[in-house]
Length: 236
Image (tube, rainbow, N blue to C red; front, top):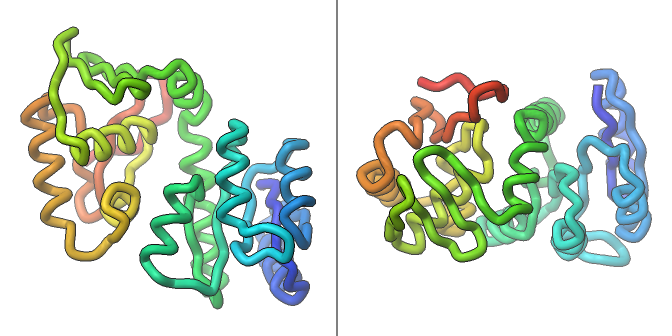
């Protein structure tokens, strides 16, 4: 059971979503604007937020960006009628955890919520502490997030900017399998036409950092396994 905050000024949509979530035994709180959403998220106690992008008082993308700047890590699924790839990429880059277009299939929305909650639960606290320190250690690799440098066994490994971007996103999501589509959206801003380019970047990272660092999830995407003792996604 999760505590879900629904942020939308359309009472009919809120009613439908709340009914859907109640059937899965989730607790639901709803607010009609961004300021009330900000207050609720700052107050805490929310496991996930469904945030409409087009709110009456503030753009949802601006709100999620502000929250992330404040250090608020509550998972957020963005809801919007806009389906352009560029809009989806921007929403993810600004801090959204997923992006669902309206009108949506109820079962798909539920599946997206459950997937984001699983990702959030899988080792989120240790990763947050590492990111705050500015370093991510994946022995024998160390990622300096501030300087955007990578070291293996103490020696610097030079990565191209996009190679570093791929590595950083996988590393900050350590323990979670990341789909190819999500990775391409995050790094290239589109999920179309760059699948082969992504594969090439993964191949180069493996050559530079070792074959065992990045695991392929067949038919889905890629994974950097969680440290021993943490719950990790099953590898290939």
